[in-house]
Image (cartoon, rainbow, N blue to C red):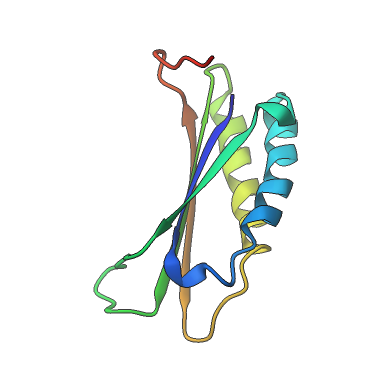
Length: 116
């Protein structure tokens, strides 16, 4: 059930251990929100162009969106978000001259969500 989307700047292709991150992320989510690892689904979306503020280049962005079935408290969601950011930092090797902007959010799936 947890649907995880990771948008990341193309500049991080060689420095972001995506498989290692997902492998560590799924157990973290399962433990934090009381679900099964098998329910976690992560997709990575490479973003070819990103612009941060007025910087012409030299910045890279990673944003993680985690959506869950409703029922978790705001405190649990905040704890998960913080833990995910800590985990993420360990799976990216900063490239020379590149400033990283890391963010994450955890929210409920829309009531219309269905799966088969």
